[in-house]
Length: 116
Image (cartoon, rainbow, N blue to C red; front, side, top):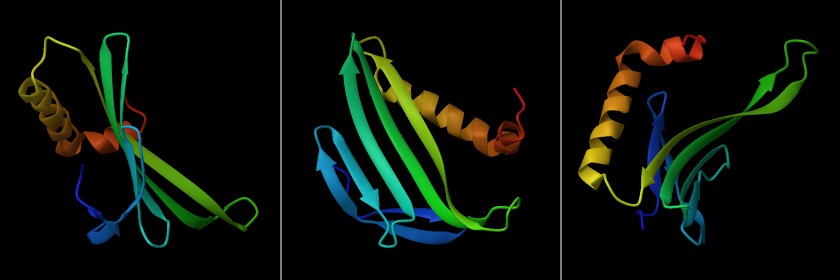
């Protein structure tokens, strides 16, 4: 089990995420103001394991059409979809490291810009 609380840094601001719920192979961590949430889950089906971590943030933003404030949320997730055998944890870690390095080398802006 992950330590409680978890911590993430958003735009240079650390956010503490205490564990708020635990289920069968899932845990949810959430900031005290409920604006940041992290979900960690694991599923097994048809000879595969899916492991996911998802980070969500909610903000109140002005709708540019009618100038009213609305709640908006954005979620980012990483899913590891692995077979029951054939890859070691180390080999999967290499793939995760490769993707994270690719994203942080300037490719996130291209992704958010709609490039493919």
